[in-house]
Image 1 (tube, rainbow, N blue to C red):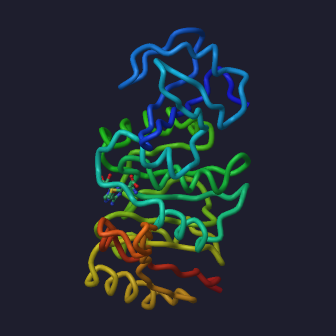
Image 2: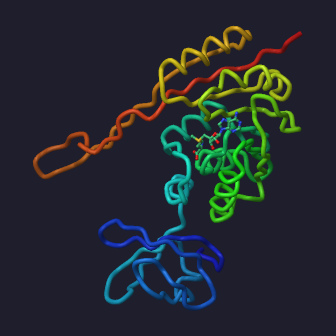
Length: 254
Ligand SMILES: C[S@@+](CC[C@H](N)C(=O)[O-])C[C@H]1O[C@@H](n2cnc3c(N)ncnc32)[C@H](O)[C@@H]1O
């Protein structure tokens, strides 16, 4: 059911998305002008409606849609990499995740989505303006209840919680490993996302030096397929390289 206050998008016949928050009455929608949102409130997800003679479908966004529609500051992580991070960290409802840095908040949304409604994500970010931008994005997505941001440097500051998992998307994750010892629980999981192979090697060596176990480094390659009357082939517009992912678990230190 589509409710007042929901953030939704109207999908047109060309596949374009027009975003709006369902309000009381007329709402301005970019590219469409003014839309009477009272006609959408109370309808089912996937409701088809006509606006100025054109057909649209009203849809509630999934987490990947929210990630891709946010206002961008720093480069965001792609849904394919965020999904792999959340799954390989083994996140479940009720867990506590510490991440750094927050950037635009895209990965944060995927992490929150995996631990809500009883768990939470604490983001550590050393640039105040990025923290505020991410806050706007996370509020727009309606996920702020399960999130906290702390201004600080994960290489030396403590988030003040014991984490089940730590997720790092920053240039030098290996320099945070000593500090993370204090707040990642034994058996806890860690992930790092880096664009270059030299950074990947630095992280893996850093984890090995600290006796982390089940260390695994990978690149996540996905190809979108196109189905044409003449045949089926990978899209020419496929994204090439995004980043490398490293995962490990922390053993008990006794
Ligand atoms: C590439 S962006 C993260 C993008 C984010 N994962 C997303 O999907 O939107 C990297 C962020 O890490 C922050 N950062 C870098 N080093 C940091 C550190 N030592 N402690 C906290 N934040 C850090 C940067 O300010 C930047 O906001």
